[in-house]
Image 1 (cartoon, helix red, strand yellow):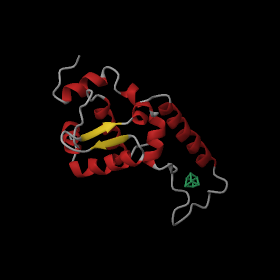
Image 2 (tube, protein in one colour):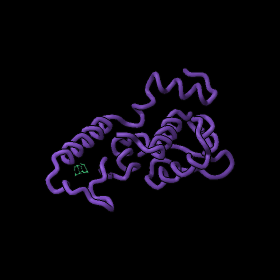
Image 3 (tube, helix red, strand yellow):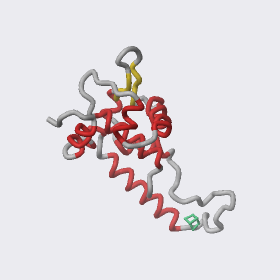
Image 4 (cartoon, protein in one colour):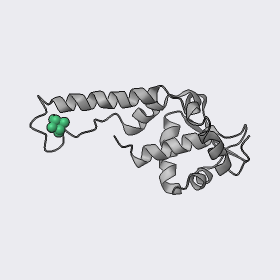
Length: 147
Ligand code: SF4
C-alpha cells in the first residue's frame, strides 16, 4: 500500500501541531514552511482535518492552527482510513471490470492485508507519533530548543 500525498501532508501537519507549546498556534503557511511543502497543497489537507474535527483554527490576533482533543487522542488508523477514503487497494470494479472479480481469491487476500495494515496503525495515537525521537526533531524544526 502507498498513502496518497494528501494523507501524508495531513499526517505531517498533525505531527507538527502535536508539538505546539501551550498557546502556540502556527498558521498554515508556517506549518508548510516547517514541513517543507507547498502552502496550497497543505491548505487542502488542513481543511479536511478541520472537517474531521482533528484541527481547529483559532481566529484573531495570534490566531492559527491547533490540534483538538480528538486530534490528540485519535488513532492513526482511524485518521488514515478517513483521509484515504476506505477504498480497496486494487480497482476490480473500474470502468472495465475485471472478469475474475466474482471468484477472485487475490481480492480477498488484499482486503485482509489492507485491514492488517490499518490494524497496525489503530494501535498508535497521534501523541505516540511525536514521542522521541520524532518529537525533538519536530520541535527543532520549529526553531525551539528541544527539552
Ligand atoms: S484479479 Fe482479482 S484482485 Fe485483481 S482486479 Fe481481478 S478481481 Fe480484482
